[in-house]
Length: 249
Image (cartoon, rainbow, N blue to C red):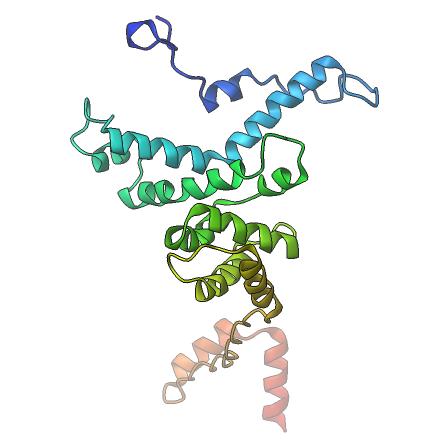
């Protein structure tokens, strides 16, 4: 039986597992030593980059797919509810699934805003975007729209290359204060808000209070036998010499 076949003679789409299995074994050393990659190397390099890109956009693809499955009730043949489906099929809670569903429109808007040129430096910069960064952009996307989140990310990355989730959170917080719900987002307003947010000093974490030195264990002075046993058990030769000197004095 062809494991790639579905009902009605259809074939299932190629999965990430298929991509991984089709990659060749690591060569151990370069196949060629020419400055430009030979055809064989170019093909392998392209396939390898597809595998890495799958990792970077997995949360986006999963969120969009779960949204389709949920709204179309595509789980209904085998599961009574979407909650049962994500739990039994993917070991995922409904909260995790909903989080992915909420994030995918922002991730897609970011990639779609870059056009079709895969060599565009801006696209390469966004391809480094982490799930945690998209999560920080979500509040402004849900209050306004995903395109506003794209503008916030673009303005932030113009000031700080490859901004972290923490930096984006500061930018989004300031933009949310400035923009009113329902108002069209203006690039200059967003840019000014982002500059002001990043100009502020990052809030410093309060220093932890110094730990008090451990208290020495109480010695059982009322029980000479117990005291003798403890001293014999824990004292080093150096301790004994010091104690003998003190007693002699």
